[in-house]
Length: 368
Image 1: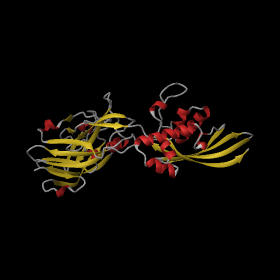
Image 2 (image 1 turned 90 degrees about the horizontal axis):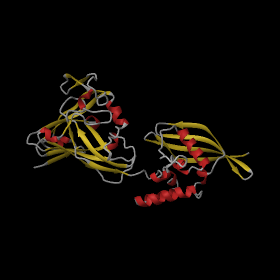
Image 3 (image 1 turned 90 degrees about the vertical axis):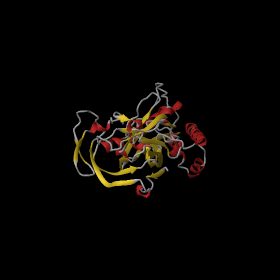
Image 4 (image 1 turned 120 degrees about the vertical axis):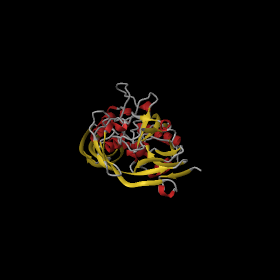
């Protein structure tokens, strides 16, 4: 009879799925980030406390998370299989959380034993490939975790024949989704933890992940430079430079460059009524609302304060943390015979190292 347990419930509740060791730890030193035969040996404390030497290249991982030293379940005597599926299939964007359900199953006729780290990063790696077979880079969090020397808590589990163990993991913890597109995603499972020098990794089935363009950003057809004809791409610039480029683009009438760093979704939903309407829309309805909002901005129908052209501006102050920032700018406008002075406070959010304008306030400073 097939028995199943899950990471959402303690493993000991399944009668024959046992946790042999709880709270044991492995000391990892920069595994997976320097997969070279000359890498220094790192001391490892096993669950019995006996020291052993393990090369960081033992896991077969390169900085991008590739699967050197990988083997399939079949080479383990058909004793274990690794499967993965979407936890809640939906529309995904580059900044979305992408949860997967991972299942380890004992398909053999003897008990299967393995270690599973409390932080799954030390038990798994994720591969995501483009249709051209380009491997996506590992995420910053994954690189940082495997680049540190730290104790790793793990459990030893035992699955009897026919039993399986499931848990949920997030794709974005492991790989950097750098834009919309289709990706072939698979998972590698290391039964003795990453970098332990134990059995080789087991590969899962492949999932096709479709990532759509962010709804709050201009569609690809609008991302062409009107000056050079080249494809525009948001760059990892400081917040004040993002604001400066946005204002200069408006001064020159370069609408595509102007919209490049504007989060249209955030700007549209600043209005509570618009936010209510937007949240009730289907994905297609939201896309149409954002396109209409973009057209209205360009026609100077809505949010006139952000599209009006200043003849002069000066950045007064820039403040930011890891994820949010504010840039204060003094701007001057010609209004018939008057020269109006206003102070803008642009609010920005950082996503994948790129700062986007998500809101603003305006303070009238009089005229000159």
